[in-house]
Image 1: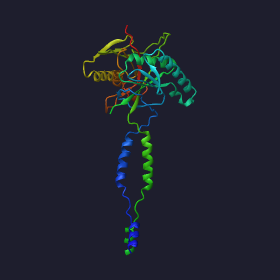
Image 2: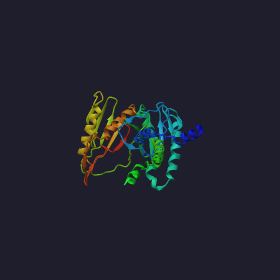
Image 3: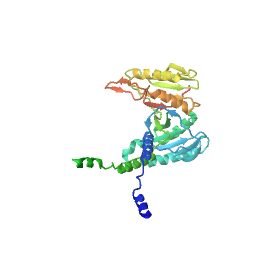
Image 4: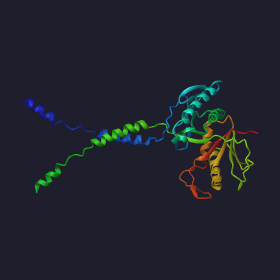
Length: 154
Length: 171
């Protein structure tokens, strides 16, 4: 008799209540939708680099990414080249940019607009003298379109 | 008679399993594309240097707007002769707002001139340059500004959409 009773209880197990889980999912969905970004630009920010805030709302585009952090270290596509005060840094920069330029020149005709695009990610405390030097080198190679990557204001 | 009421009571529960599957997939997609630091861009152009002097007869005096950024002030220069039109001193807390108002006024009165040259001194910090670019490009909130060019009327998206950064000629 006892055994029979137990079996009956197992068969009538209650359905799992997932209402609370669904509530959390909906909230998560709203937050994720808010932070969704459709730009094709992805930047791995290097250490000791804080971006300036701006009111600009133009989405970024994929291109060569040149970063200069607070200490003046230059990175192209996240590879460290040296410091802006170093003698060889700008020589190395020219070499890397030239190879990037050539690589992009062989890409599809349809992407012509993006070929000569360079994204600058500068620390907010950098002086214009440094920025100008970096921009001049990029311009010498053939990158004529500069984009400053900035952080959107809240 | 009674059969009908029984059928209504036995109505099946809504099956939300496929919807939940879709929502889960959606969440994964959004998690991968989420960017918690919102990155945007400001477009500038390399200064164009022409070694051959070109003679072009101009219909009227162009705006040829230049903003010279010093450590204590911003000078606004206009025209072919680059005459100082206004000076904004940084000790004034609202200097950026005043600059924006002046630039907007100039843009509305010169519909065909859509570029501004910003030339900072070498010691000026990047953060400040970005603030000046913001003042030269971002329109005041919730207002629509229109300019009439030769062919048509257009709505402004930025005060000056073309921007050139060039080193200051201190002579």
